[in-house]
Image (cartoon, rainbow, N blue to C red; front, side, top):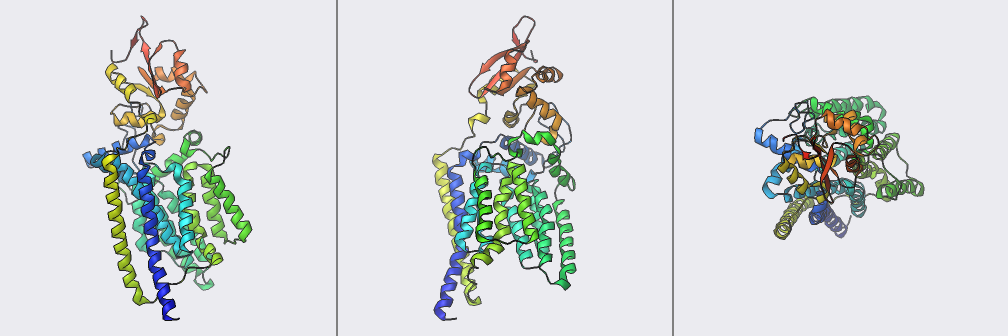
Length: 496
């Protein structure tokens, strides 16, 4: 190898180390600039409220504290660490705090993805995959715990795939990642589930005499990961709580993020599936059986629940990285060892400069922009009126639950579907969406409701307009309020 060629490789190697940092910084600044779009899910309200409760009391919630329909019922928070982080940032910087945390989570995710892919494919293709992943996940980039867990998911699966590509077992030093994931978000069960098929990829390509030993090492690692996932304040209950929502049956089909993918109109996800099929046919991409299973499993998950499109977007490239690297050619190897230390110094210096520039940009932007939550999730005027009326038991729309919790108003229902159960929430939806309107008066009487707060232009308010004993007293473009009438036909509430 000539000296000039070696120097060229060294320069390329140092340049590649900066690519993930630059991509991550770009993603951070983009989501900071569009930060208001991250504040569109009312679950963010109760996530922050629970995090603040944990900070105030120094302990974990074990029962429901926020509804009047399930008060005292067993309930645990499987995202407590994310909730604490959101609550702390909100207390420091108002809504700018959760926006910054969310932008950092996305930035770390794409930076880690590019770094992992760069070991197998050239940097431009790695960056392209990262941008496509962001495009697919864009609908689910919200100020909620799953975004803070996203970089951990990418790192975990990427490290497992890297071990399988080396025909080796994962290092036990990676188990703290699983413990961190389990404290951040209940999606850690996916990381546990993927250990099996990824281990088969490693075993299948190992030397015949070493397959059993390698398989046993993966089994021990899987047991260690299971134990690590229970290293939370709730212990093994975290695992039970994280899987509980999967048993909600019919209810999963009416909550948007748990709905199956809809191909009635063309979406980025549909384009990604078609592109994946086209790539396989055009380039003759050949995959091992375990990799095929992983692709099919991630695709099935995304087709079944739209919230799983995130995992499809970020994990499928990691599964395809090695086969694509062999197809398109690998990036050149690092230069001689003498050049590695300067490259590390350059990377650290570049990282510090990028962090400094990003924080300066953040400070300047925050000085003239105030992040606000979307108005469709915050019926401010309606709740103000209900507080003046002294309403105690409010039959609220599902999407208003989080905001009511933030106002310390006991709710009928909110986004914690696993707390309320399939039948309760399904009866609520059927009653308020007009599918079984006869359920509405029964629920109002059974739970001694004295006021309702439902979404404007939804079927529920129109049903209440025709329901004897109820009177509409307020309506705007966001919410409608009905209260009970007394015997004389005057509006009243339970507190009067």
